[in-house]
Amino acid sequence: MKKLLIISLCFPLLFSSCKKDDVYELNEVNATSYNANKNKLKSTNQYISIVHANLFQQALSANELVEIDRCIQSIGDKQVAHEIILSNFMNKGGVIIPSDSLMRDDLDLFIEETYKRFFVRDITEAEREFFLSFFESHPNVSAEMVYMAFSLSNEYQYY
Amino acid sequence: MKRRTFIKKSTLGGAALSIPFILPSGRLFAATGNRMADHVVFIAFAGGVRQQESVLQQYLDGSQDYPSSGNIMYNLLDGAAPTDKLVYGENNSNNENVPIPKLLSQTLQQQGTLFKEVNASTVGHYSGVNTLLTGNYMYSQGLRVKPLRPTIFEYLRRHQGEKATKTWFVGNGIGNSIPLLDYSEHESYGSQYGANFLAPTITFGDDGEKHLKNAKIYHPDDELDPMYKMKYFLDNVWYSQGNALPDIGNTIEEKAEIKQFVKDMFVKKENGTVAHPPYAASGDGQTIGYACEVMKRFKPTLTVVYLSNVDSCHANFTSYLKSLHGADHAVGHLWDYIQNQIPEMANNTSIIVSPEHGRNLEPNNIKDANAFWGYDHSDANSRRIFNLIAGPGIDSNSIIGSESNGVGDIVNITPTIAEILGFKDDVINSGLVYNNNSLFDLI
Image (cartoon, each protein chain N blue to C red):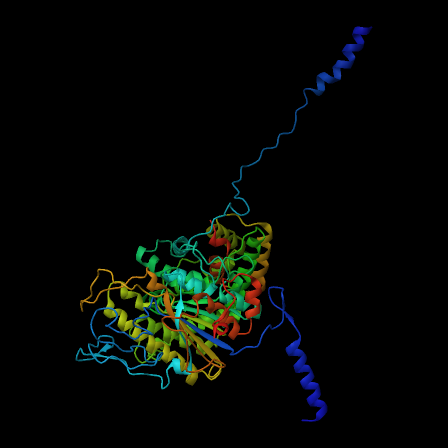
C-alpha cells in the first residue's frame, strides 16, 4: 500500500518535468550609449578637420587647417568664430547635404542618420520626438540649417 | 514742466538710479564709486620699450654710441625730434627715410600725467600683459595657460554688469598666448565675464580673406532662429550630461552684431575706408585702425589694445625705432579719432599707455643692416617702464617721478582702470590684486 502511495505521488511529477518551456530569442542590436562615451574636448584642429571631413567627405589640407585655426584663434567668442567658418563652408561648393525634399520625404530616417553622422550615436526617443515635432511646426527648416545646428552644438565639440 | 510732473519724474528717476539691481551672476549690484569717465582705452605699448628711446629721448646716443639724441614719440611725449641720422620714419618714393608728421596738436603728456619711471617686475610679453590686466605678478604661471587671477575685464563685467560687447581686447596677432588673456580661470569670475578678443590682422588679413570673408549671413528670423532653437535643444541635452563649454556671454543680438561687424570690415577694407592711421603699414598701425572701428561700432566701456611690433628689437634695432615711432603715431591717431569721430566717447574717455616691460641696458650680439645692435629683455633695465594717463579729471601737463626716483608699478594699472570706471572698491575687496594702489594714489 505504501509503495502504491509513493508511485501515485511521483506520477504527476513525471509529467510536469517533461513540460516544454517557452524560449524567447532576441535579435542582437548594436546600440551606442546615450552620450557615446564622449568626454574629451576636441582641439580646434580636431574640430575643424572632423567637421570638414563630415561636410565635404574629404580631408582638409594641412595649410588650410593652419589658416582656419588662426582665424578661430583671432576671434574670442568661439561660437561666433565657428559659425562664421561653417557658414563660409556652406557657401562653398561640394558640401554633401541631403536635399530638402529628400529630408522631408522621411524625416524619421533623416534625423536618425543625422544623429549617427554627427554624434556617432543613436537618437533617443525623446530627441526623435522633439525633432519630428519641430520639423512639423517649422516647415521651412532646411537640411543645411539642421547640419549647422549639429555642427555648432556642444556635443559635437566632444569625442 | 508742471511742478507735479517734475517731482514725479525726478522721484522715479532718482529711485531708478539708486535702487540696486540683480546682475546676471545673481549678485546684488549697487554702484560703489563715481566714474571719472565712462570709457577707458588702455594701450599695452608696444612689445618691450626701452626707457632710453622713449622717455629719456636718447635715440641712437643711448644704444649705438652714435651722438644723435631726440624724441621719436612726439605724439605721446614732449621733446624735439632728432636731427641727425634719421632712420625711424617711413621710406618715401626716393627711398629717403622721412619721419611721420606729428598728428596731435598737444601731446598726451601735455594733456595728462606722465609717470616717468615705473617698475615692471616681469620681463616677458605674456607675463607682462597678464600682470597689466590682472594687477598681479604671475611668476609661477607659464605660457599657454589662462590667467589664474581675474582680469580687469572680469572685474568690470561682474561688478558693473557690463555686456560682453562693452569690453574688448584687441591684439596685434595671436602669438605669445595673448588670446588667452580675455578671461581667467578664477572660480569666482571666468569666461562668463570675459572680453571679446579680436586679432584683426588675422581676422581681416590673408587668412580671414580666405576663410571668413565669404561667410553666409543667415536671415535672423527665418534661418538663425530655428537653427539656434535646435542648437539650444542639443546643448541642453548635452548639458544634462554634465558638460558645458566656456562662453563669454554674448547674447544672440551681440553675436549678430559681431558677425555683422566682421562682414562690414571686409567691405570697408575693400573700399579702403577702415579708420587706419595715416601711416599704417605695420601690424600695430593696422590693429589700431580696427580698434578705432570696434570703438566706433560698440562704444566699449573698456578697450584694451595690445601692440607688439617693437619686439623686432631682438634682431633689428632700426625696425624697433620705426615701430616705436609708428606706434606713437598710431596711438595719437586713436586718441584723435575718439575725440573727433566718436561723439559718444569724446571728452568722456581716459587713455592709459604702458609698456608691458622694458628692454636690456646691454645689447645682444645681433647687428642689423645699419650695424645697430639688438636688445633683448632680461636684465634690470627691462624692469624700467613709463606710464601715461590722460582724460577727464586727470591732471594735465604733470610729471610724476624721475629716473632717480621711481614712482609706480605695473600692478597699479588694474586698480587705476577700476578707479576711473568707479569700481576700485570691488577690485580691492576681492582681495585678489597684488597692490591696492592706483596711479592716482601715488600722486
